[in-house]
Length: 466
Image (cartoon, rainbow, N blue to C red; front, side, top):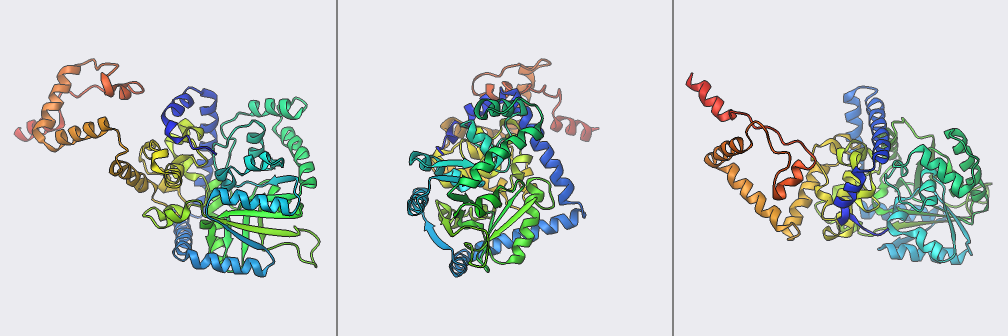
């Protein structure tokens, strides 16, 4: 997927004009946010916070011994009959998948939800080589049918209304007209069932990799993960190296906080664990299983002060809580990962110069850290990235000059008071609706406040005098 994150501001402005999209996103994120609150703290705030910290510790412990755990997972996968491959870049992943496709004479592929495959543009590579690729997560399938891109890492079609999806199914799949969501889902299920039955290869991501057993763990609510991994004769799991956890006990903790944070469920409808291909004593499962560990910039993050970002479990809770995401939706962020976590990892994976606006796409309200199930300090990282932009000379000169002048005025009590008096004198009882020059960005979207007739400092002196 091409990176267009430098277009965040114009794309956000377009999103602000799309009332239907904003209503859809706001309703969905508000519902998810409230459901998370209810289920995360159903046993009390203290219990919920303790669960978060236990999950955070499990991910950080795994990260501290990442190389060793990856090697342990590789050994266990191989012992279970799976083949393990390693890819440094996205292009290498695509090449490895194409090698598997040719080796097994694959003609059709069904996919379960995989953010890494979006990251590396795998679908386009497969289609360019004449391979039929079908996304089987319903949201991803809708996005694929509409030649669109996901706008949320958990609910990729959050930006579309029911009417838009209905019209899309009628247009692309010849669905009989209906406004009943259940009937629409049943129709899509019948279409996808045929794809499952005839596919040569299934491709998945992995929510977690358990090192001590060599296990890929996938959580879904639709059952498509089970179909993708058991019906085709070849299963390929493409996972980022950061998905590793040490033990089954760690997974047991993380699989509690993930659904609670993502969809407000105590557990997802389906939980799948895969160790390897079908054994001779088993009646179902793939004949061949491949696990591809993907770096694609993650080692650079691991070696930086932003390593904590790799503990993210892709629940989307930070997006549901973020006032910026809830207003602009996901497409404005210009890449696979939107919202607060996207504002951090998009610049880290693609370079600050390719995503300069994203560290500033935050009010720094702290909601993202508050809801994160592994307690990632996203606000601090956003501030650090802003500092990096300045240090690398990627901050516009007028912002630097403006902030320096602002700092001078605020550091001097005399200048601060003179500035306040001048502002009160100029604006009077009727503040201007539009501020001049570069200040117009403020009044364009907000009502400029009326200055108090007396400043706090002036009132304080008067009261002290009395």
